Length: 186
Ligand SMILES: [Zn+2]
Image (cartoon, rainbow, N blue to C red):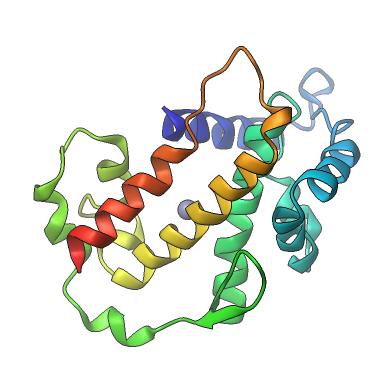
């Protein structure tokens, strides 16, 4: 469910960017200052990720005014990926970082454990299906997802007062899926 909503949120962001020349499709950006203030007030860990981003616009790409709670947790998630790549290290929730262990890239590809899980599951499709994300080929990127979902859920919990009452996004699903994949792999 969360995955579906995340994909919808990402698609909406790109649709807004793609249609930004049309007056009728002008992106709603009026919520952004408030959203970052809320992030600072409610989720210091998520705000630390925002602060660490050199290009704040990259963080904003994922933030939609339609659902600030989902937008902020997705922004934190995607920004963790960017920081990991930039610094060659996994940023940790309470500060500090761990160097990326590139030696694990020599291990067998995570797609080989896909058969242990329901092939129709959206997370299996996204992260373990051959030809899907880098995590299907390289364990380093499965660890990268595990860390990004850890930040994502942590921020979602801290920001729970911003959650829309009319929507159900289960932020635990992503972290639970990645924990199962990593445990199934090792
Ligand atoms: Zn991710």
